[in-house]
Image (cartoon, rainbow, N blue to C red; front, top):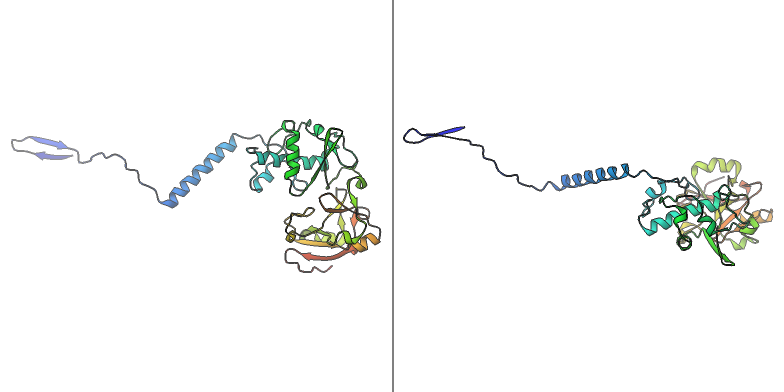
Length: 293
């Protein structure tokens, strides 16, 4: 308190602290950015805490687990079916898994050439990784999934008013017959390039025992490299080792080679294995450096 005295002895007591209204000041740009990021992260935590309905999904690419893993890694795929693209992408991935590996356990009536009726597919009690029931999809959406697949993994067939679909290759289902599914390769001139993409961590076991079909019906080869300027079926994008097959020698020794509708080269090898003696060369990728074997 401050005291002021005036003539006549009057004293007035005054408080020197005067209240001022708060003044809004723009924070430093870096601090502002951090505050925004903090708020966004908190909003995301609140959202995911209230959305726990994740469905089982297939292990991707050529097999994987059913879930949100793929949709986190791949740009443009949210996994929640928030747009048409996500919905169709998730449908295509589930169709791949069913038609290659799950038809038998799901009691689907699959022909020896791999075809099943689309209407039978759409009766299955399954959900895609976008959390959408398969039964909610339409035949037109199945057609759209086939059309959009950049590796052409599917074929559509119409017979007697019935729409059928199949995976062109990659099967582990034993009811599928190779001769019905695939076209035989009769000459090495039909496939100037025949290459299997793999990883350095697998090279030791490959050089020891050859290329194995594992749980699938065939060993897969590509008829080209990623540098050819097109999407290459039959090879993962992240491989770092290339194993080239000597097609002439393999055919001469009686190895049966086939090609699928989407240009993947397949073989059962001999007893499920392509022996090392049929390797033409092995190179690193992408440097293309020779690897001795």
